[in-house]
Length: 93
Image (cartoon, rainbow, N blue to C red; front, side, top):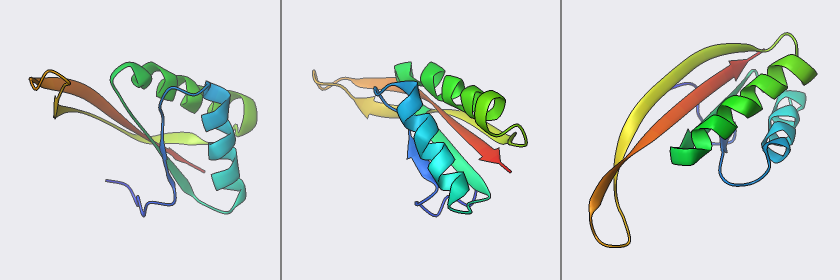
């Protein structure tokens, strides 16, 4: 993984994309060189949107340093094991 020390990791969920964009901007303005966006399931497309908005609208010098995809096995509410896709996008300046 990236230098995911915990304070530069943003977990993308169900909020509006601009909420996560603001979190990325805040991290970069605080002097972080990398920001890690993590999402799983239906939030993956939102994480990609956030990365593209940050790159194209706010920090033209930001690059996608790394993208990791994977699968996590989870237990749903019925007690069945299900596979959930995951993504980790590392943005760097």
